[in-house]
Image (cartoon, rainbow, N blue to C red; front, side, top):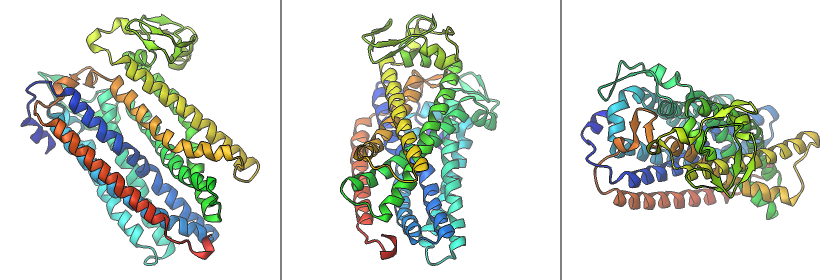
Length: 447
């Protein structure tokens, strides 16, 4: 349906390209953190309920039941933001949908099935407390976990295709002889993007939830319920964050192989270089980085695991085909810098937890956790900026430019203002709901 609709919006000009990209970026920045909760939070809720069935401790049942209400609220908000995104694809990027919709349409179709499965079973789970047997209730949550993962999997497969297009023949400006399964799951980007996003889901959801309870710790709320909630959330984030470093190395090597211009933009590497360095901070002036702290050979090691490997520079890429280097550099360094700090925080927590069989006692640790929550979202957004802006000027790498995909319709600034109002309203509603949930008194046996 989106492809048919897109055929009716033939691009007239590209004067609204910047506005369309800003509008899409706004919607993605709002929606992606909710995707993280869709991936990770159901598993955290089910883990708490499973612990209740194993131990009989009421605190785990209370935790799972309270968190399930949060899960439902965030799912509802995600439905709104996800629906907006689906309409934006057709209305803002009709050239993209009309040209390649027959290639990746299967991915969005399967994502729709995942959404309906998740919606059905999340309702059964939330309203099944005290109506289903304990074991049956736990089983009713498993499809929620699976659907949350598969929904993101199918969407990420589309993004993988956009970064490494395959599974079709491009003839006369159209994608023909299409093999959707190959296009979605045969591209080399899909697997590292999916695993990277999967761990990011646990990092963001875990640290955000842990940040709320760490803030409570700092204000003196250190009861059994708070300690249990903090332990569950922080364990999820602490396990995922060091593993994300390994996945990031995998992703970087795929970028070096398939999108060398993006890799060069990560560093601001002007000339092709053997033993290419990395510069912390600094500014790319069009030829090289000035004012940064040079780390010799590091880019060659990260990209090819070789001290003197040759790294292609931006000098071999036409100026019109280069991404905005400084935007990509700073977003990449922000993602890597925050990710490294989160991994170190996770290692500290795991060491204390398993070596000393207790939670850390330092007030500075809980201050760091309270800060880690919002920083994890910053790293998430920076990572997607790195991926999407680093692919520019292509919407489908090597085949279609973003300027060829954008709509020629006017009125985008009005839509932008409207969406800002919608998202602010949603944010206020979520804050109100979460505050209301948090004020519900705890049962005496869960304190």
